Length: 523
Image (tube, rainbow, N blue to C red; front, side, top):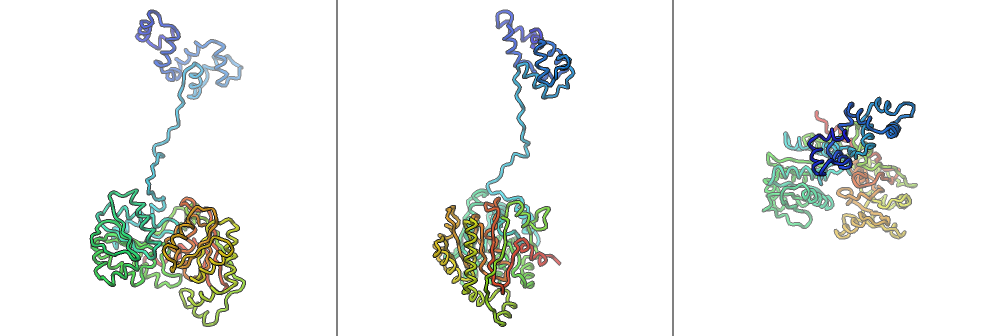
């Protein structure tokens, strides 16, 4: 106990003796020593450790030496004195002497303590958005953001819009799009985004279909404006767009490859008259056609040849990177040919060669071909056998869409169709059921409706039964089922193109993404 008293010091020992009414006992001294003496510092000091070891009884020295690795071929105390006494060995000594040693918990470096915002972008989206904003607020103040289908161009665009409204508000942003699905998708996505990152209450105005275009008192927020509505209203009220333009500092055109259609271009020109007005185009296919280079050049010139393409380090093609990283599903792409195709006349062949798209007359004739339709149905049945629960079918015409859905329904399958002629209620109900988590497999046939603005991550297969010479249209159809697991979709998807041997087709989603790059290169 003299050893403990020496380390406790005279003052503390004297106080303990006084409390005890005499000399403090060994039990009291040990209890206080456990608190008052820094045992770790004690055993770290070589001289103090030597003294402490000498106080340990012989049998206990042998036990300690054995715990610390002695093979018993030398004196225990000599072995203990000659140890290197690493931190781990010192800890074992303290525990042997009865001290409670708290093992240090591994500290998480501060830089790993991440807090993700509720409306965060993936790193590749964030980099692309930052580069695009550099172009939007300087020089010509217009640019195209080129993201593959399924990579979240709407979400990325809405993040940029929220940034704009926070920085430049009160102000108006106008989102232009074609089709009810794209328009509603945009409105809903902004509501979701602004509820997470907004800094003030803002209205979202849905202006399409039968909605009133009266925007007289609107000076702040987002206007989701249907292109057809914009064109028709501008005809009846020439001041509509010009008045709107005085309060608009950012115009966003979804599916930007459509922008050079004369009526649409006129809408954009009227909305971007302010010097501080910016124009953002969003698209997965920054070209109008596959073969008409003049049209593609016109589109690039309209945006001053300013385009930000998604770039990922280590990859020449970002689509390949996004598939590897799980943001896009790995596509299994194949074509199947009908046993008997149409027999095109010499005139039909000439028309097909000259046209930028397959003529409607040829499509109508194909939709009646029994062998081709049989191949379409067989392809769908094969995909069901492979356990695909949600299959999206792109039909060749309204009639063809109804035909395929009817044949499948007659076979006892859950098959529905939507076309531009479908009522809004029928369309929304069919899409809602297709997006649901119900286990029963379902086939959704469509024509002219779901190539854009349709998001159903559970869809893992697509049947393209709509022959086309348009790489834009083909890419859009493929893109409906290519969402990967990191974006809520599937690891793989299967895309089957049912072809007639006499008609053209496509087959590589990665090559399609970079098809127009040479058009956008500045001279």
